Length: 312
Ligand code: MN
Ligand code: MN
Image (cartoon, rainbow, N blue to C red; front, side):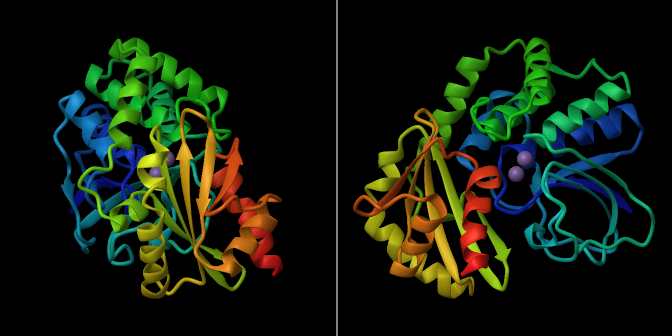
């Protein structure tokens, strides 16, 4: 058996960095040799983060096998995993998302889930509980980046005091300036060069079951929203295509301006526009529904859309 730590598909910074940090802890501090893996190619923000702290990119795992002992981080959703989890041995889950069900195990497992903004915060708290404070600077650095990424530098309403405290402590260990570091991360994240419309729509994309409907919600967090907004015609064509390919009932694309804390929603059909207007109690201005203060899919977007999609 080999023990691996891994997160969700369409990897973000938390889902890559938390498994790396937790693998260090399990291997070095608990003597449980663990290898971090990733469930897909890195986005530009995460590429920047790993490069900055000199951490090698984990190997992409295509599917689980019967030989894998799996530590799952940053998700508990079977829909967001690479293939084969049912044949592997799931041994632990560390997460901060709602419990969706569907995972089964043959033996009892350790589960640590908290309603806070980031898995890296939970990982830091687990390390603290074990009195482990001597982590290498680069591990502290990538954990800090995961928190800055998931909280959009503490501006997301998902942010808790626990996340802020963890970030402060990790910043002390790695000696990084939070303002500079997040500016660099968001700059990297906002670079769309070389990306197709499909890449842009899948950089952070999840499918949600809402009643008997499947709804795909893609999000692009950026400091340069116009880079994406000016591509609206091509994005709309790709969205219509994706709707058929993914067999979803609705698709929505939110471009989130990190600096302004504001979302611009692109929807392709009259039906979807009507749903969005009802969900957010606002009207489209041209092609976009502008939503000041909306930055979190988990806390703001999904609950609002779910209400109208289920009620429809
Ligand atoms: Mn994630
Ligand atoms: Mn996360």
